[in-house]
Length: 87
Image (tube, rainbow, N blue to C red; front, side, top):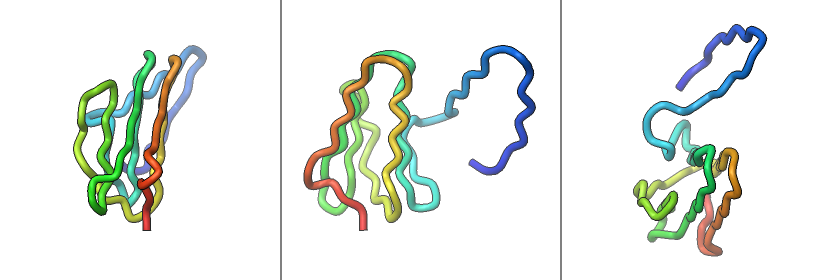
């Protein structure tokens, strides 16, 4: 990640993250859905957060900042278990 200069011309701009849809950056946990209907679930795993998107586990993460979810288009279901927290 980093800073980018973007030149926008008339039309439609679609931004899609490259790589995993779940990652840590500067202590924040980023979770990206798809343009379709998604089920995004975050559960506690010890002192970490386990992330599943559409039944697929993307691993456990230990964010020290915030959790940022970008569900995208579609009829999404985003669930965060009651035990999930960040320091």
